[in-house]
View 1 (cartoon, rainbow, N blue to C red):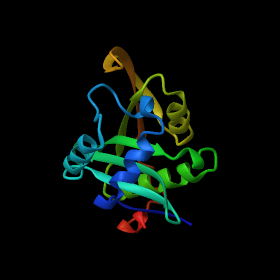
View 2: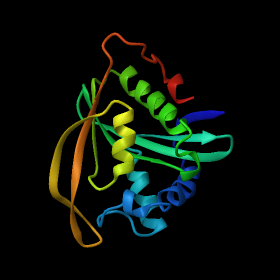
View 3: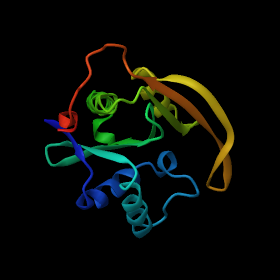
View 4: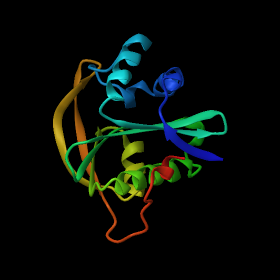
Length: 170
């Protein structure tokens, strides 16, 4: 059974291991290099972001985060799922529940940025209904090379079936 819940400090080692499955997709040159840097970075992030973990039984299946930008706009600030759940529909279900919790808080748009060369996340986001909005040329460095970042967005459904409580993360 899949469940979403808020990130707890005890999750950090498992989240670090998850992100290291594909560091090329998860970190640019400004990202953490060691677990200690990652832990400090995440403890700062939880002060301003909503971070959820997705669990399958006792196993960590994924992590997602967003940051409020304004009353109507949120910015997705990370999404990563364990390779073992790719292609099984689990990531899509978890992401839709996470989005429902964002819509329930009154946000109308979620802005998303991702490395332009990450075709897997672009396809996932398109499947979730994201619309491409632009390209930031040579926006970040990864491995000492300037790379592009894509901008996409998701919009709250108009009068749709929204999750109306924090139960979305249970």
